Image (tube, rainbow over all chains, first blue to last red):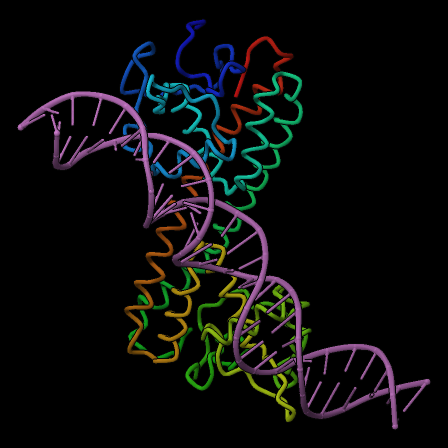
Length: 158
Length: 158
DNA sequence: TGCTTGCCTTGAGTGCACTCGAAGGTCATA
DNA sequence: TATGACCTTCGAGTGCACTCAAGGCAAGCA
């Protein structure tokens, strides 16, 4: 398992090696070597808008995106992997500012491992809290729904 | 269990009966009859700001809050119960506009049971989706954290 | 009497995460 | 040569959920 596949996150020349942990390798439209996607292709496969992709780059959440000879963006499989990861972080509710901070740490290299871990752990805690809150809300919802289900209408309810 | 307790949601004169489903009765600072809380007391026990409480009223998310002879708000146990429920809805990520719609349906009475149920069911589905997304993100996070945990630093990572 | 505290109203401002518009460049095809 | 699709940048606009400011009233206390 030492193949240098497209699973490392791409943040320019700093992401130098294989990613041993992004396990379930996502299937990419094109193999490495031919992975030069236009922005509209990336739009098609990520669901993000072109505006958002450019904005990610502007704020430093995405850097080192290659360009064509005419200056147009050409995304790589690594870039797609990074966007996937950013999507996960977004799912957890992590603020974009924190994602940018994380991206900066990746660019700074190995010296930031501890800080990166800390950031991800706090994100993890937040996600667990959110799940607990959702379960809690779900329980209330279920009770209400049940009430509306079998209430022909004797009692009044919220 | 026919006691007219403080567990019915309070939305003015429309919430006419007992609430058979808000099961784990929350302990309120004061018993029914003496439940006339000032806005600052409600701030203290809900964690919402006074601004937010007034705003909820303004947009129709909260109606029929009693007033003192000088025009100050006096919240009841029922109001607190409603705020609790609103908090749960907020946890699910339901937009405030939908909560207002729900509140309006409650004011309209029993004829809206089916619609209310439908709204809550779609909210429930959203909550389940969110939980699944969070689990998914959590799995990725766990892998990353593990990587940072035992990586002295051979590989490069996102 | 004056001061402080707590509340009231209306309307404007904030922060976040996009989202869009305008003006213009490049390129393949007709 | 021109048409249309697609790209670029920069700056401004949007929608949501609050959040705050200004100005004022009423009650309690020194």
